[in-house]
Amino acid sequence: MDQGTRDQLLGHLTAAVGAATATHPTRVAIDGPPAAGKTTLADELAAILRAQGRHVIRATIDDFLFPRAQRYPRGEYSAEGCYFDTHDYDALNRVLLDPLGPDGDRRFQHAVYDHAADTVLSPPVATAPADAVLLFDGVFLLRPDLIDRWDLRIFVSIALEKTVDRAVIRERQVSSQADVVRRWRERYIPAQQLYLAAVGPTDRADVVVHNDEPQQPVWAVRTRQRL
Image: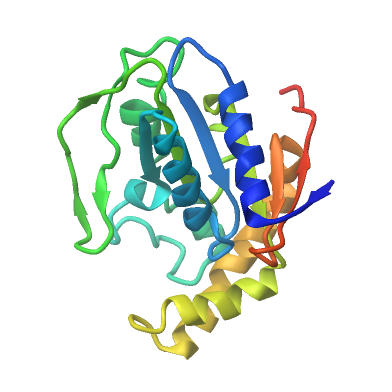
């Protein structure tokens, strides 16, 4: 396990992306609980890779949600619903991960859903160069039905209780503190506990980043598990 500065972590992850060679775009999963710091890490890594001349595709699981009317069959605060009913994995594979994979034509769409407007999207199809990098952040990315789609797997770990405080700060402009706390304690944290127990994502990751202190991160390189 290594500990260092934020820049040292980003340097390690940049090297890991470079080492994940493939004849198709490199598909990088940045998994972890809500409010763990996945998006920030992905954006920082994207800036470094672009400065090095890599073509970077940034995408997120939030753009692959089912419409609101479909994603709460078990109730708005259901942890099982969060894990099983929220994300359109068929669309994610069809329009993004498979086209960028070893048998794909590199013609992809980066989103199918607009979270703010709660509407279905169909953005123009783009063609990725063979040496592109997809940086994809989101929850539950190392689940069994997605695990073989990734060429590099990063899991951002944090004490789940800390995510509540971060979420209250992050979402204070759009939600009351009481609503944020309820969603985290009844839906998001139990859903992560279900995922951790059922899937063991830290054992499936290539790199686990302990992000409780973002400026003093700790990270561990894992031996990839046979699946």
